[in-house]
Length: 98
Image 1 (tube, rainbow, N blue to C red):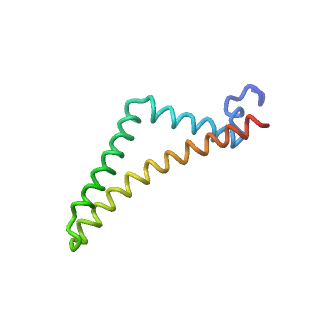
Image 2 (cartoon, rainbow, N blue to C red):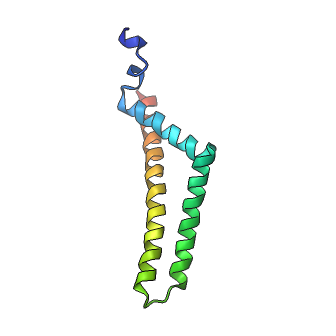
Image 3 (cartoon, one colour):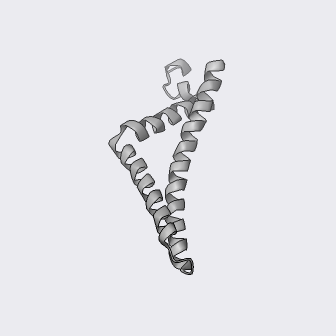
């Protein structure tokens, strides 16, 4: 098998790998039922946490921390996925310019 025949060789360029992976993640989050559900659930958790913060007794540090944690977990997960997509878009532009 030559280098040209190796399917893994095609994606040896880190920018191409990032572009492909970013596109896969974007497609997963927008077209796959599980991905769409994950995004929807994260948004629901963030909205619920915001309401919990608004309604929390200012003296109830435990409730405030719990709501903050709930929000932060959902925000981090969606942020990580968004970062992969953005990195993929940037990598695609680099690949197109080469």
